[in-house]
Image (cartoon, rainbow, N blue to C red; front, side, top):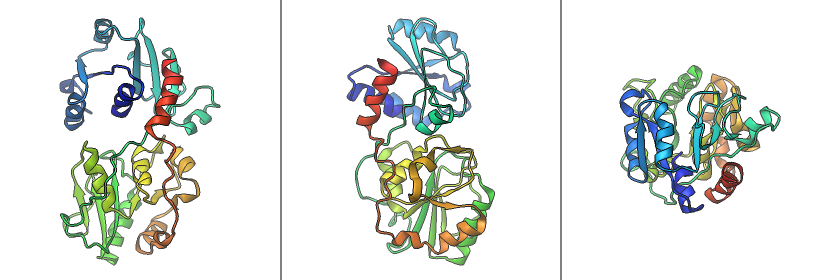
Length: 299
């Protein structure tokens, strides 16, 4: 949402105003994310959906953009052009424009609805966290960030713990991830989440590869894309409900189907010797994505 709003102004020359539920009544509210938005945009809070129409009227909005699951709900305007950006496997078109966040989702429903992908927009720098985390420069580091509870494949957690014991010189970094190991695993490190992009890149730069273990899979794979654009190989489970990341990673994905397969990849990372480009998300630049955003949502 932040990237679309930012580049709607920077690249398309429009004005972006953010509407969101009042944090006091929304269990998914993220204080750091809200502060990031407030430091950049006008942010308007609403207590109930009836207020949305009043806010759109007050700001004389031309377009009401909504990023949501994709099922029909009451977050819609009857007077202002509403564009719905669907994230998950629903085909319940509503609003004036209904589009998915990936080509994979669009293809899943026979291309009956268009797609506008997410974008990857990270600062370029080479700083890392190895010194501050006391990780040797020559150590192999696997890392992950994403939703707090979405590193959720049980056998992947077990494989990480097994690898951490078998090879104490391996390191595992988990940012914004629910703990699944205790303090005896000195080489499994947990860090708080961040909304700061410089820190995100610093985290990615610390890692040699990303370890991904989300049972549901990805309808686009934003965190995967951020690692990928920093030329990091992605280890991910072949069994998933949403498969957009398979589409994008293709033959450059490092796939596993079991605890033993993942454990072997972790302790014998021969893939790190490959001299190839691991950047599979190079097409999702702000310029390319916002061109499609304009074409699909604003035309």
